[in-house]
Image (cartoon, rainbow, N blue to C red):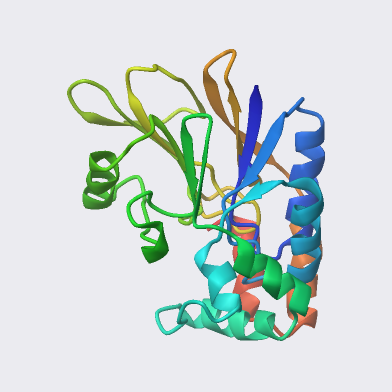
Length: 243
């Protein structure tokens, strides 16, 4: 089996189209979305439509729930808040119903898929490569050996062997079934790893290989849409630097 796992689309249609096209050439059996379909960028409706058409399994992200009033935006940054207020006005009733139907987690083939930390997914806890406490909490509560997340927009692999928790710095990792793994699959629509390309992850069960896949797209087109939609210009600028 080959799984494609993507996350944090954030209304960036150009990025999502490029990633879905890449996935179409990868002989993928199952595609899974880890949430934040909307927020930040100017095509939430089109992104929801594509996810519904191409992806059977999806979980909710904090921006998805914020867009329909299920969580408060008081802790959002200024730019996230402004973009969310704009996004709320763009969504159709059917799109709101779809976002509201998304679960916080999906368990499949002895794997767990969540938007944020697998510890209390409804709290949307961020995990970064240097988040020692959050990482320790996550590994302390793991039921499944393979756990896939998004949320931080920073792709990485962390695994626990017999003795310690390790950060794996390559773009792929071979799975040892005796270890526990936490995989951040990266972001489609707003990379923050200083690489403007979209990122998603492929897990090949035959090879026991999890790999990050980077896809270039025309972010200039997205930048133009941001400015034409009167969204914060910072959101356009950051696409060029991937941060």
